[in-house]
Amino acid sequence: MTSLTVSGRVAQVLSSYVSDVFGVMGNGNVYFLDAAEKQGLRFTPVRHEGAAIAAADAYYRASGRLAAGTTTCGPGYTNALTALAEAVQAQIPVVLVTGDAPTTGARPWDVDQAAIATGLGAATFTVTRDAAGAITRQAVEYALTRRTAVVLAIPYDLAALEAADEDLPEPAAPKVTDDVDGGLGQVARLLAGARRPLILAGRGAHLAGAGPELRELADRLGALTAGTALALNLLNGEGYLGVAGGFGTDTAAGLMGEADVVLVAGASLSPFTMRFGHLLGPDATVIQIDTALQPTNPRVDLFVSADAKAAATRLLSLLDREAAVAGWRAEASERLAAGPGHEAGTVETTDGRLDPRALATALDAVIPERRTVVQDGGHFIGWAPMYWNIPRPQDLVMVGTAFQSIGLGLASAVGAARALKDGRTVVLASGDGGFLMGLSDLESLIGAARSAIVVIYNDAAYGAEIHQYGSQGLTEKPMLIPEVDFSGVARALGAESAVIRSLGDLSALQEWVDSGAHGTFVADCRITSSVRAPWLTEWMNATRAAKAAVAG
Ligand SMILES: Cc1ncc(C[n+]2csc(CCOP(=O)(O)OP(=O)(O)O)c2C)c(N)n1
Image (cartoon, rainbow, N blue to C red; front, top):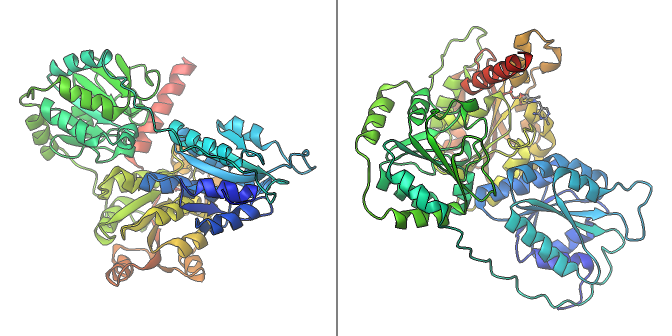
């Protein structure tokens, strides 16, 4: 190896795994950024460190490729923490390259960064002069194999020192484990005996690339299929019921509730997926296949710890004869056709502002079909999965939902924009509250995106909170936001924009799309807060029931 600084060695090893780095510079990472440029890594500046890891996280979710975030030590590092927690909780591999206290001891302003990371569940790998390359590789491999966020710390006094020569062996080929069998024989027998089988896929199935095998399995069994929001349309095709949980229709949920054997692949069965306990019938046999070591929901009757793709492949060989049940899919398609879809919404609302459901439907027709949808968090979060055509699971990126954070949407849009290679448009959906929280990175998005649309569901409020707490009589003053002219802000930063007060106002966006959809367009949509999303109603009912149970 040629002579390199410690930062240079880190960048060199990192460049064999990643091509993109997001972050903000400072004295703790300036040498790393210089070295990263020399190694040919592409740096996308963000304007707040809160965006560094969120962008890298969204980059991974949109493309399946690893990216890095970088911050200076101390305040730069602490600014990045919310997104770091989200990546840990959502099991997204990501690397945060950060400066850290000198090896000679902490300065008065240093904080214990490794201890903070531990509190979030992230491991810290601190590089040394002798083994900067090996430690970098170890950190990246750890993030990839354990699907988690790691911190790669460069002590302040080592950053610019020459690194020792290192002979770095090639990374070991991933071990192929054959952890099928045993339980899977029983799974195959249960599936073969099912009269109303359902296969429910989650993000684990998507990440494992198990879509085709699970789809084939469903066809062989005559099963219905569904997905969590993070595996949207993974099992699309005959018998597909849509999203399991609050973003789905009641008709589809009714059918899921009648399944007698449910194969859950790579889904954790969160309360949202389970409709707070109401999704599956009480007598259904629930089989879970997951890389977790234990079942993740008490409803699981049979658990197999395995990769979803390997398990589905094995199940196909165990169920090699055509065993499709008769009638179940036909009944489902009849009921789906007859049952109500999602509420269309109205044109006239009591306060004269837009009905978000009618707006979402109209937007679906205007935004380009080749789209990657990125979402912030808030009450609006269901409108896109319910009303927009989002063809593949990786086209719906929701950074923040695992940790239940708002404010990471703009940052995520930056990451998704950098990840896309195929001319897609990034469409960010955000509330006004979350958008204001991440506002500094509107500038980053405008700089980074080849084609981006920002839809702000602007109800001049923290809408989710109005629905949950204002409706109980709690003071609404902290829940209100003055009506911000986002269109003006967006133009000042270099985007195109329009205020959308009526569906007719969408013509401005349509014209922008027709003229090539280049750059960033911000649609500041003035919506009513008088419409409550069904998923929130469900959540509020569940919360109320849980409180009543505690109160006895
Ligand atoms: C970082 C963070 N701060 C506060 C909250 C609490 N919170 C949850 S939803 C919400 C309101 C979001 O408002 P907005 O972005 O306008 O979307 P809306 O709910 O109006 O659709 C708030 C404040 C949170 N989840 N995360």
